[in-house]
Length: 128
Image 1: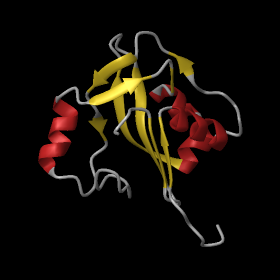
Image 2: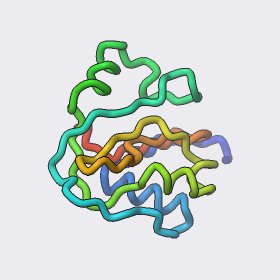
Image 3: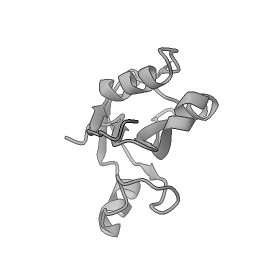
Image 4: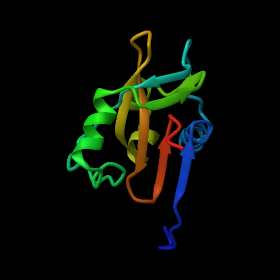
């Protein structure tokens, strides 16, 4: 808030840590089965629907591939369900939801979050 910003990026467990920190250590994560070593498609909130930066300059071909092909590698036992994000007021006031994914069991969960006022990004998958 003092105007000195530095980027923070959380991947997988880092995503889970950021969610827990922002939610004042109240656990909103859920256990999810059969999500270790799985690739999923993303459902990206289209650039322009909120002031995010993760996907706004991504070429359409890459956006389409991320949504149409199972390219994103997920390897986790805990997740932030989309419905849990929506109910967690501290999370919704701090983060914009920028993408979701669906588990092999049909469970919808948060894939990427972007802080509304800070350069803080969190992804549940492994982009590396």
